[in-house]
Length: 271
Image (cartoon, rainbow, N blue to C red; front, side, top):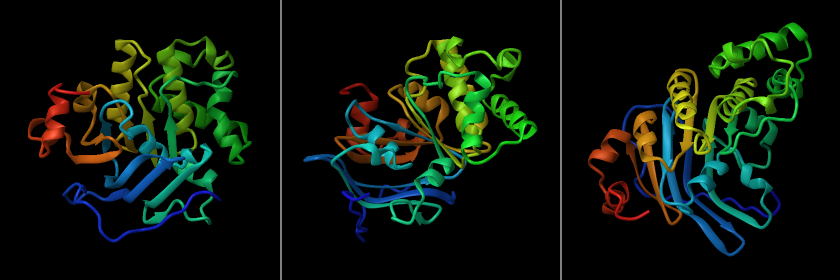
């Protein structure tokens, strides 16, 4: 990015999660500005592979901004400035040599509001593989079926693949979006409040799906729902005013937070 700069500082706060997990994404001394407004401040975190990491905190605390730095979605924002480092499997993702299309194949994103394309269910799922050069119909058929099964919606839509995805319910549309992300075989799935617009039954289905998917994928979710964070995540990161305050095992963070600001937030004293 022409208007982005990257630097790597040596000093970093001790916010890494202890343990022997394999780190797949690592941010170090990450700062981000939208124009003059600083949205992230010296964020350092090691995200473990094939676990669910939840990002929590009050509105405007930087958790969604941080999530979008992980697949360079913030590239699209004018006047942005980023310093520090974000590494995916040891590779600096903001290096000019990194192909952003390749990066977003490795690191998929599911947004807060279901956003299926205005096309058939089949074409929604086949869109990504076609973009990456797959044209063989039997191969696409296999990918579509596998992806819809992976998103736990195959049985609901297998007889209506040629119908518009926009005719589905909100919860079904969100699982179509998850299937669409899975179709390009990502390594990591980012989910930005992916259930906040859904009813409780649909939310429960997505949460069950997350539990299944973590056997194959690394998942990072942003959620305002702390009960959801305790239900689905292995690790939890608490953000406040653009800073990462605390990061650790979810059970430990909710039962014995190390920072009083974390305790105040999860007990409802603010936020």
